[in-house]
Image 1 (cartoon, rainbow, N blue to C red):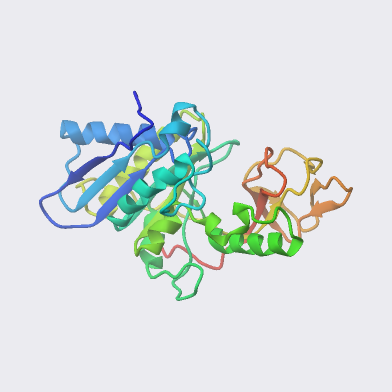
Image 2: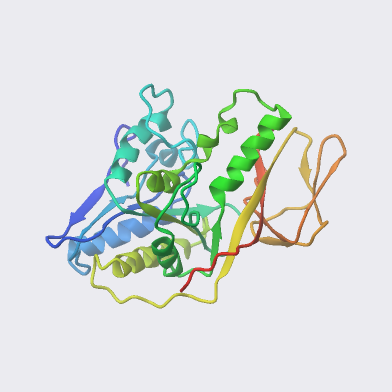
Length: 322
């Protein structure tokens, strides 16, 4: 696909009958192309007339970060999926993208955000918080979001992202690491789905599989069709939820402190941990052990000192109600 880095390309299909307003995004990280391929496939079907948009509207943004996509890397000048907020003084490429993408998200009610991951593993979904009126991420669409997550075709669903990130920010401040760094701001944890919830909508991130897994675009395509069917935007068959589900919550994040910090093994997301298992060793010789039974999630073997290194997850008290 020929791609300019000076604008965002979107495809919008609006039915004549009223209904939900859905937006589907791909390549928020430029090397995560499963969503892009899934979007391109469904757009071709709509344009050919084999899928008909009969209610509401759907907008597809196949590539949210054209600069990163052009170079087949995660970011252009920074991670678009952190600190995703409009700004009056854009400094980096991703700031200028946010000034276009955020208003576009705000025009919609539901977001399906399509990603992939580096290590081998099974696809999974990330959802938001329980309904609450708190200061961090107030929310009122828990049931609708759970219903969407349940129908995407995956069996593992993770929550607790922004809470865990905020606890990580508090720990960074306590340690006094990298003063003034952007990752010491709780707003740095805001990505596409968090922004969507902040403007009154709801959203699910689908991690479609490993970046280069040939099956991952099919996971994205299936999820798009399921979402269109679930919301009644297109008259498509709706597959039943892929129960039983494994529901996990991110408990906290552990940062890499120094260049000499090393993992004890080559971890992949959702590797099982027993309480006391050795996860890593610090440059000063101290050990990082699992404080509880659970899973390691998002281990970043290339993390920079002062940045998030891995997350720990435990079973969630929240079901999907599917």
